[in-house]
Structure formats: structure tokens, C-alpha cells
Image (cartoon, rainbow, N blue to C red; front, side, top):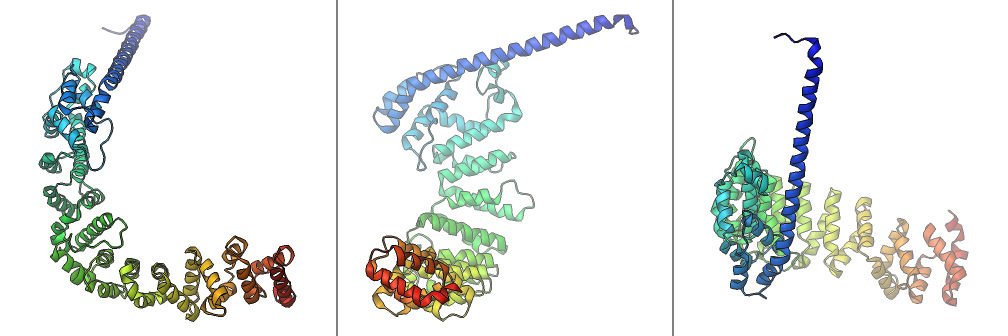
Length: 493
């Protein structure tokens, strides 16, 4: 039937009515959805108010476990499991986990449901449930099931459910990358020794395969979170033919060591790592063909109680790669290496400025023995860059007050020579701030005026002028005036 132009009005009217009905239908769905969401949140608030104190009491031990479990089992409705999950995991458990929370989730049936959903056993929701249940739409649409599976894996990791680790390891082979990432993080939280080899295997595959699903960073972060007792599982990776695998294995053990050491300089590795791993760090890794492996081995070697550790670190301190020497210099900054301060000081003349800076900071941490070596090097070296780094570190470490005090006590000693060099280099702002503060006693100011009052440095000259006019102590003021009179021509230059 041909379309006539006379019928255009009827066609437009029909289209208008259809569009209006469609808009009204969508508006009705929005209002219905809003009403159901309000009802849902009201129910959550009511359950939280009623059962929140019960869960808190059970976890803290103030309410008997059997009584609290009985009350929580009284929650009914089609959204019962969802509500229980929200209530139990509303406050994230501490890093160590909570055994009571884990038992509670098991007895309420949550763990069994999470395990089933992790394996993909998700009951498909009806159309009515999809519109009414909080997770109904996700359960209705099959390609969104990975969200429920990922959430289940996350929950098992939150409660540190150790029996679930085989299921999480199996999830590492899943085709969905999001589920794999969540499974890795859950395994890192549970830290079951049985899952460590599987993560190491995935790490090796990530290096050898061209386009791995799991990132190397994610897997390495998970491995680092395991206790150091699992380091033996990385022995094969430390001996692997692939240099990047050896590097990642070494760096993983370094991360595990530094996490367990927690800044404790007396931390010892030997009781925690196997003898073969210790031997690898002392005899193989410091001579690896990959310089990144040699660099990452240095911090681990520094924690070994073996007497060969010091000589191995000094071998690395002479490595051809500057960043290997850098890691070695930093690793020597421990009290047990104070007796080797002399050999450490050889790095002060390293060709690379970062290595020299690390050596200065290491020696600074050795106390008076390191300070003596630093000042001796500062006075003897002809390298102006090395001298500049030592001078900056003396100021950064707050050692200027100590040098000034020693200068006032000993007179023309090494400290006086150091301060003299600093003044010639124009690094006098810290000295002046010490003299102007409460640390600058009358005796100290007198000694400074006698030794440095005639120096042409602008900051010293301004301070001397100020002392000559404003100083209340007559002797100090007289010394300042005498210094101005004797050093005025030099101060003008």
C-alpha cells in the first residue's frame, strides 16, 4: 500500500504517542527502582542497627559465640546471604585476620556459598529476582558472573580462609583477568605455603610468555607478602637460565627480607632461610652475569650473619656497574660493619656521584669513627665534587653544631680546618644559624670570632657587624669590633 502525504499527520501522532508511552514506561521503572533501593537501604540500616552490636560483641568476645550465631541465623528473606555478607564484612578485618570471623562465616554458610560461586556454580536469577534482589541483575546476566566470582574470592581472602587456597590457585587459570588478579591478592592475604609454588610458576610464565594476563608486578607483590620461610621455593628461579627470572626471584627475596627486618639492624637471615639459598647469595648471585641480580643481592647479603658477607659486599663495592656499587654502599650502612669503615671509605672517591653520596651517608651512620673518616677525606681530597657532597651531608645530618663545639674545645684541630674549608666554600648559613640560636654560647661565639671573624664570606661579615653593635657581652662585642677593624678590607672584596 503506497504511503500518501495526506496520512503524515496520523503517522506523526502515532509516533508521538509511542514515544510518550516509552518515556512514561522508563520513568515508571526509575521510580520503581528508586523505591526498591530506598526499601533496600532502610532494611540494611535496620539490620545494621539490630545486628551490628551482636557481630561486634561476638568478635570482641563480649557476647557468647553460640548466642550471637543463633541471633544472626534469625535473619530471613531472599536477600539473607547478601545481608549477612554485608554485616560480617562491613569492617575490614585486620591484616592478621580474625579466627572468630572466619568461624562465623563458616557456620553461617557464607564460606560454602563463596566457594561454590568461585567455582562458577552460580544460580541464575529469575526476572523477578533480577529486579528485586541486590545482586539479581548480575546473577541474571551470565557474562557478568565474573563479578560475583571475583567478590567471592575477595571475601575468602579477607577472612584468611586457608582451606580455600586450592580453589584460588585453580582460579589463576581462569580466562577472566579480573578474577585472576583478585585470586592472586587473596592468596597473598591467606599466605598458605602450598600456594607459593603456584605463584612462582605463574611468575615464570609471565616472563616467558609474550602476552601474560597477570602482570609481573601483581605476582611479585603477592610473593613478597609471604613469610621468609618460603624463600626456599625460589631456589630454582635463582638458578634459572633466564636472567630476568633470576632478577625477579632475587628482588622478591630482597622484598621479603626487608619486610621482615622492619628496619631492625640486628635482624639475621640464617635461621630463616635455607642453607642453599644463603649459599646462593654468597657464592653465585654476587657474580651473576646480570648486574640487576648483583645489585638486588647486596641488601640480602648485608643481613647474613655469615663471616663471608662483608667480603662479598666489598666485592660488589668494586663492581663494574655503578648501580651495583650504589646498592653495596647502601647495604653497608649497618652497625655490624662499623669495623670495616676504612674499606667503606674507599667509595668516597668513586667516579659516580650517587655512589659517593651513598658512601657519605653510610659513614655518617657509623658515629664518631665514620665522622673522623669523613673529615679526613674532606681535608685531603682534591676532588671538589666529592668535597661538595661531604659538605652537604655534614649540613644535612646536623653535624655542624658538633663540629663547632669540638672546635671551641680543642682549638686548632681537625674540626677547625673543616670549618675553615666550609667557610671558604661559602657554606656558612648553618654555622651562623647555630651561633644565633641558643646553641651558640658566649665561649663558642668568642672562639668563632677569633678563628673566622675576618673571613670575607658575606654571611659571616654581616653576622660580625651585628655582633659588634647588638651583642650584650662586652668581650664578644669587642672581638667583633676588632675583627671588623682588621678584616674590613677583605670583607669589602
